[in-house]
Image (tube, rainbow, N blue to C red; front, side, top):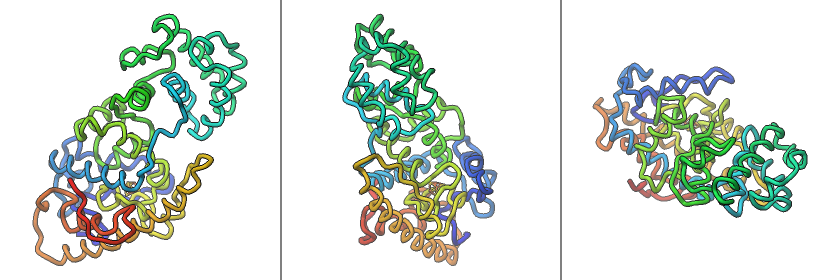
Length: 347
Ligand code: SF4
């Protein structure tokens, strides 16, 4: 076994500079039913069974939960209407930018009726910093009108109703359902789709298929928080072009380890912190987590080397992540544990 390999599943070839996002398709073929060897695993690689995939996926989720205990919807809102509008505005921009304009927007137009009666030009002026402000203003205006005309002024609480609103697709609908109505949902945005493919949870680029594949791996009650945690990770560590593999807390469980920078020191410099005002403390927390991740990798590599020196066998009992480079790598000082202890990551 390659001593740098994080687990018994195939490694994905390191990406060329700036092309990291195109590589994961090789790793996710497991999800599509192809053998690990065909997916690029090479000698010694084994196919991952559906059960092993589910176990590994849930372990990844547990690590992300430890790494991002503060994961949440990063858009500020006080009710379903505000979240719906904020989510529409968040297309092609950051949540931080949206949060800068929505206080003024909702102060002037606090509900669908007021928004519908607003001058389109005034909405445009307020939301201009979010980009594509004319199209977004039209969507916000029209969806407010439809909510008033067809839903008696209240944001509907069902997916099939939400997606009939102008500018609202499944992603936006799931955000609103999960965070404003408490209905579990997988939100497949660009970050979630990318990471689901890198994790090998899906082989598809189609958000609907991604959503369906991921739903099969997790309990329904976990869908909303899973979405937040994966998106947090995608925005801060597993970046589109420069994933910080060497500082990644889920590296021992990730078949795509190596598509980004694997040197812990260099990887830490790639970490991104999209901080909202008042959340500056997250930086120190992430740096601490990154240090833990580097420690994990060192132990993982040592365990993998020891395993390579021993007898060659099949997939360890418990599936990927349960062998020398899986569970054990995560149990010692996982993210948020301060780098001490021998705690088992519970199933
Ligand atoms: S940054 Fe982490 S999750 Fe992303 S590809 Fe690298 S090891 Fe996998």
